[in-house]
Image 1 (cartoon, rainbow, N blue to C red):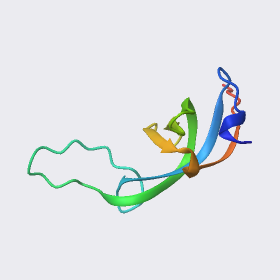
Image 2 (image 1 turned 45 degrees about the vertical axis):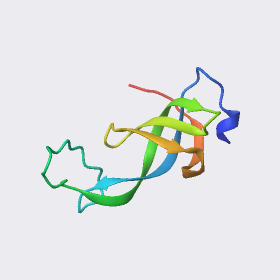
Image 3 (image 1 turned 180 degrees about the horizontal axis):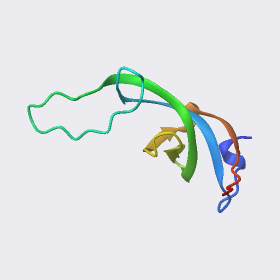
Image 4 (image 1 turned 90 degrees about the vertical axis):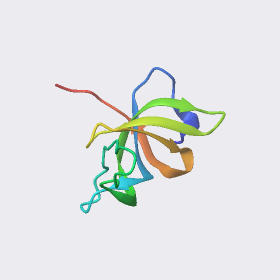
Length: 90
């Protein structure tokens, strides 16, 4: 399935990669350092699965929420793969 094939209003997920600040284990770091403070992470590539929230066809971007960290990322279409339907269960 391609991002152009998804139907608005239906839930989808995909695997993705993004360059962000990560810790030594490769997990994204959520930080808001003050001026002059060092950032606790280092730049790195993070890969995971995310639930697609918004698809921007004009700019070919998706806003998604990572299922592992519940962090929101904006990712280029070229950095998304394995797009599929999501089934929510209790």
